[in-house]
Length: 288
Image (cartoon, rainbow, N blue to C red; front, side, top):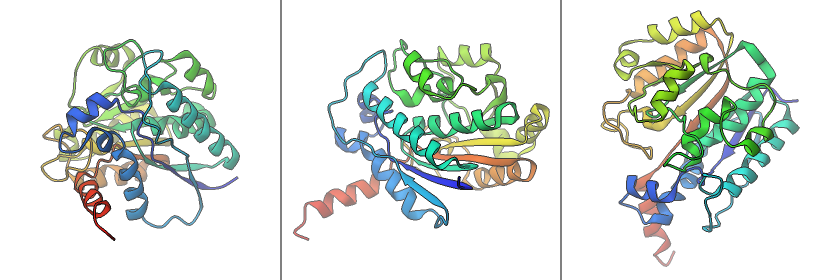
C-alpha cells in the first residue's frame, strides 16, 4: 500500500481523430490526435518531483483505431483502462495524481477512489465541457463520456470493469462549463449535476465551497481539463472555448477546496502543446 500514487497516463485514444484535427488544424492529423501523449510527457517533466510511487500506463501508438459500440478506439480504451486499474489495485494508494492524456484518464483513478471512500466522496470537474456523452451520441470520443462513465452510465462492458461503488451524480459539480450542447446538457439537468460558471469562479470560491459544504463530503476528486482556462491567457489544451477561468482562479479554487476537504484524487488532462510539437517536428527533420 502506498500513500500517494502518481499515474502518468499519456492516452490519446479517448479523443476522436476527426474532431481533434478540427480543433487543432495547425498540426497534421496524427500529430494532433497523438499530441495528447506529448502533452502528458510535458506535464510529467514540468510537474514538481514526486517522492512516492509512480507508474506509467502503457499506451499504444497504433494508428489503427476502429470505432466499436459507439466509441472511437474502443479496444484501445478498454485495454488501457484495464492496465490502469490493475496498476492502481496493485499499489492500493490513499491518493492518486494523474497526468494525462485525454479526459478519460480520470476514469480508473476516480473509480477506485470513489469505491474506496464510498459515500464520503465528491467530484469537482473543472472543464469547459460536461463529459456526459454516451455511446450512440453523434460524437464517439470516449473523453467526452468520462463523467457519465464514472457514474456508471455508459458502455456495459466498461462499466463492468469498474469497481462496484460508482460516483453519484448529485455529488458531482462542474466548474467552468461553457459548452451547453445537447444531449449532454439535458442529461446534466436530469441527473442533478450543478455548475459554477467561469465568471463566478474567477470572482471567488464562494459558490464552489457552498456546494461542497452542502454535500457534506470530506474526500474530493478534482478533474482539471486544461480547456477550463481562458485561452487568451494560456492556450495549452485541445479545446479553446473563450472566456474561461484565469490561472490564478484555478490555483485559488483548488487551494480553497483543500482547506475544506481532503483532495484524494487530482487529474490534469487534455494537454495539447502545439508549439512544442511543432518544435519537435523541426528537430526530427534536422541531422542531429
